[in-house]
Image 1: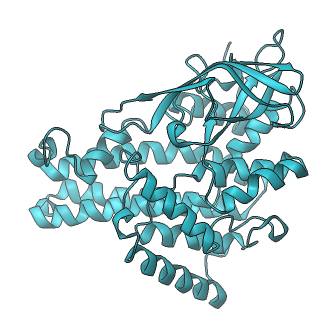
Image 2: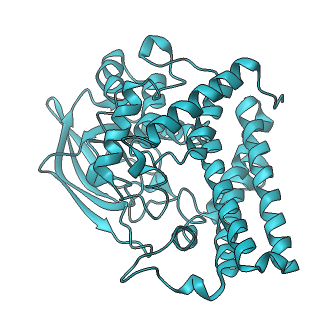
Length: 391
């Protein structure tokens, strides 16, 4: 693995950084640094406008093939963009799900008609997507999906409930895993449907988090409809397509997430210097451990992105478990560095500062996106070849 950047890559880094600095110092200065974890419902309309601006300037679909409207950039340049985006304080992306999850899935599995219909609006920042996977009884255990869809003429009719649907209220479309074979069990008989959200058969209810934010929603489908052609893959192939979507979640944008982590660590160090806790040897050791953990994340991410072999696939299984535990510990470290100030809100009733929001949100890191227990099972069974856990 060569971690050096070429002269061409460094020129691209300068181009990226310059564009971001110019745009985020001008008309979009108000969204700079907003919309991160625990702040995701902030300035939605302004961030939608930012998405459209990025589309106009060609900063969406960086790794997509050129014949589908993308720029066909190398993986290295994609990593550079996401790092610089985070470094510049780029706002939380309202269409991360559409660009990073749905689009690569359509490129791999979609029909030509689906690519022509759905990829251009994502490239332009004009259509927002959400993900319909988790259910009350099917979170980490996705194969237990109970939302049903039946074919009637030229439409699918959908009934059921999804939960933890990020950005559902603001989304135009949802890709949903539904059970289309009523006699099937587990991962068999599932299908991957593209469902319009703005219709009478869809209801969203916000889930209030302890950060005071509500980026997640319960989504109820009661006779919701979508065209028969809005199925990715054949009926019953939804499990295969859904797993492919999950694999795209560990892409180049992971490095952007880590840059956000680095900025959080830098903010904690700055507070420790300001209030004198940097002089506490235990705090200094914990700060050093946090830095080391972040470097491990970076090198592991670069290794897994640059190698498609089995060893890299196994290493990728560790990623979520490692960063979730690390980030949760960082939240605790932030509160210990803040001291008594950590328990005081800036304003009534819930004016939290960045580190307070970060701490509260990190309580969920080891649960969402695959709980620690599930991740350990995956590592044990698929990477280490241990006997399956009794069912």
